[in-house]
Image 1 (cartoon, rainbow, N blue to C red):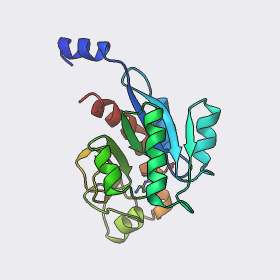
Image 2: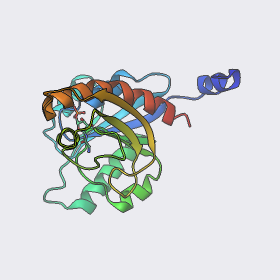
Image 3: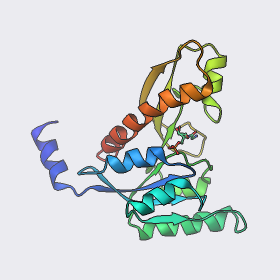
Image 4: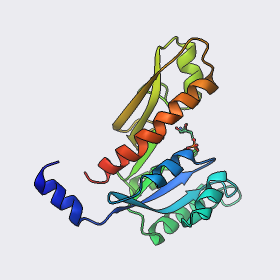
Length: 197
Ligand code: GAR
């Protein structure tokens, strides 16, 4: 980093990030562990009020928001989510195992400010069952990617990738566990750079 860049980052307050989860939230925990001068987690939100990750976040004293779209519909759900994000003062959104597709309207409102971690070496294997598909294809490498979220599934600019070998005898589960270790390293590192762009 140049001297002037260092001065600029020292002067800037940490960026404020909301993390969206749907389940256990291990990537959210890695993002929380990576908080510091670059960014702070100001909200952990979930489309599943029973998500295990919300309990963890609450126990850490992080603000949480849990709301299911079931019963109220996607527009009302996203409007409430948007209001919670703005009330929390979030400037950025990090999807971390958030398994719901955000609408085009929502993505447009947060244009260029939403990132996601995906368990494949994008552009390979967008969507689900990434590890099973990599093994079935006979790939020798798998991994994870952090990318900017656009309207199109797993298609925005890739900000960083990490690779792991696929070993003989790997199952989707053993491979997922190997990739997850890299996800936890990659995501906070990429987010720190991204919010400083
Ligand atoms: C992670 O492996 C993440 O990359 C993946 O779900 C898992 C969530 O685990 N995300 C997707 O598949 C998104 N399409 P976590 O809740 O422990 O972070």
